[in-house]
Image 1 (tube, rainbow, N blue to C red):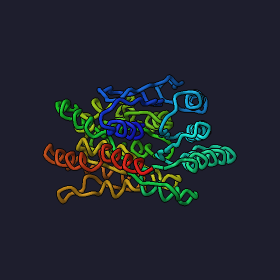
Image 2: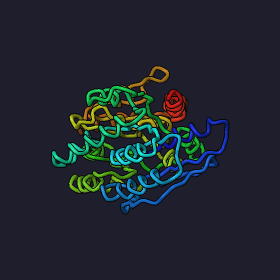
Image 3: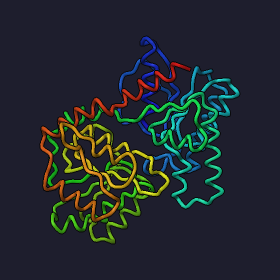
Amino acid sequence: MQPPRQIVNAAAAGKNGSQHTLANVTGEIPTVVEPQKFRVRRFPVLRDRNGYVRGYVQYLSFDVPLFFRILFGKKRNLIIAEPPPTTGLFVRLAAAVRRTPYVYYAADIWSDAASQTGAPSWMLDVVRRIELFAWKGARLVLSVSDGVTMRLAELGVTENVATIGNGVNAREFVRGVAVGTAHAPAHPEFVYAGTASEWHGADVFVRALPRVLAERPDVVLRFIGGGSEREAIEALADDNGVSHAVRFEPVRGPAELAPVLHGAVAALASVRPGSGYDFAFPTKLYSAAVCGAPLIYAGTGPGQPFARTEVDGAPIGVAVGLEPGEVAEAMLAALQRPHDAARRSRVSSWAMHSVSLEGVAARAVAEISRL
């Protein structure tokens, strides 16, 4: 997950350009390595066949070594932790022994998400308790949105919470667009780039596809990334007879993904209503906007008003319900009224200044500096 790394990078880079060491135990394999004014130390963790750290055994392969590195390693001035909640648990325990403050980056509410997986109630209760333990022990909780902040308050976490927002590494995406503008798909493409989990409801785009193909048989739907619903969506494409028009591809870095989004008829995103995650904002909308792609957002939550945001008097996308019929209409409308290069450039320029992680990192550093 990029935001905590960006926050730490900004914090270190802002210390008069001096040399700092970041013990960055990351669950994500970095796609770009840039020259930095600090040293980054990484440690191996167990991953699944797609390169993800997913599941309790994988989490423990991260958390247990982290616990001992904090406990017996060099004393740190500050620790920044992020989900899963088990990481927050081990960080709080080890940090307490070392008398080191920590900041928790609340990217989402894991216990709410877990409620959509069919997990037993006792397990949900354990996850909730662990999550609360991690939040309440933090010197500061950094929230990614007003919705997450409100949910934290509902769960009893009201002190030392700062809403810093969220964003994407806009410079990397813009650079990717500039280098890859020659990308011209052979067929009209709709692109879903990012995680497809239970609470996303991304299957709606496959359900909408038969109607779209009835009018435009040349359309291609691309899923780029992974997620727990990947296999179910693949099976759904087969069941609906549209597998020939649906492509499933691995995760791509910004440099590779940017020209794909830039050339898409529209970028797709969704959040399933009533999933317990109605407050969530899929950051794939930010990535698409930075690349100038028109947006089609299906479902509930703050993604709706974002898709309707106007740039130069026109919305950057459309927001519809999580219904195949509504989604199909939006896709067909996008095909009928494609955005030209000038419009995409204007949206990209707006997004570059509005949803960049640099601004998020600056706000985070300002909050941390007050500790």
